[in-house]
Length: 494
Length: 96
Image (cartoon, rainbow over all chains, first blue to last red):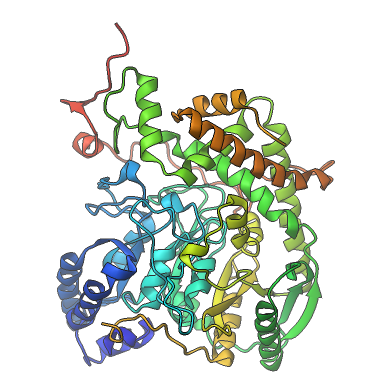
């Protein structure tokens, strides 16, 4: 089936004329049509635009001037502004926003020939770890526990992207990661998710959550596909001053590179108390596989790991409260009716337009930045953040890459959602430290747990050394031989 | 650490988010819980540690030419306005 191909395979098939871009795209738009009503991975489906673009891709393929992603159908997280296509951030407050411009990352994908199937669901403004805060409804994880029809969450915030890729209703998708929003849903849905180094991809035109942490990255079914997408997405952008002016290598060339003599660090602090035996076992399996592949395994320490989450839940809300101040119902977005003054208009608009979790984070951020509390919370957190970054700097003096679990558990059922926000935040315990330090990191699916749900391992690299995590990730992927697919996917439960 | 209602109301005012009494109480309890959990940072010694600013990954920021690169797109700017009058955004009357 065309929907079963990887991006690398489809690209080759298109060039060998085994099928056309229109056929490949049609297979996907049909599958979206069949499955999206249930999975809810897409907020906005753009099948007509996709099929039009596929015709152009076929012409490009005939002319021979066809860049790497020509004719490849992708899902785009609904946080990237797309010219003329509604972009909602899964929020009511900009539920009908139609950007008159294109984000740099999606513009680069379009220049590389990619076809957009639609805009994928997410937690509202990318704030959440289960895709349960979307104003457009939750996403169903295509995986289920064996013999149990309970709806599992796809993780978050890039839950729609992860579910779309896992269910074969996109060949790949874009995600954004602030504290784990690419890697954790990738682990929950059994796919690959790569968060590049902070500054590797431009943030211009991506709706901001926490600007010192947000980073776009690819979500795919193989490491090679992630490398292909990242090569297209990365690169300097004069419109984002934090976007690094560093040459973009051909990341695909790093796949299959020899790992002889490579040093893989195992951080002791990621062995969290109360961690499930199954997560520990899959971590050990990863260690064994990399040792067999020629790596040297080295114990390392990242002593400030346990402070990562608390630091994150000061800094991210602080930045979010500032970034989301722009949603006031004046220049764009939903405006509340019946306001009696300008302040009343702001207060009503922001109360009605934001969901509970977004409101909570704005309020938290407002508090930690307010007069009298700034030093105690925000400044303190920024200092601890320096210590977290130093931990990584010291570890990378001894090793080339770190291997850890991606998440403390497998996906949980929608009705098992914790009521306490702090319990929900704990999902990101292993992904947040790399975000705080700006390191590149990738989740790779490695095994299924005893209930039949996927588990992922995380590789964390040195700044701007995505190539090493791709090299190690492709070896881990090959050695683990993860070929399981979810029961809910294109062509199966259609 | 626990928050009192007055502080919670002040935060909501600063954030321009209108909350009713029931919502204020819920937010007070939840933020209090989160702040209690964050107290773990009290045990970290940050004496002499500089705060991290930005993400310090990239080297020096690159200056660019101070020139106009965009403009003359009034319709695009106003295309998502909830309410407009000619070339202006409009809001409820605030000056009598």
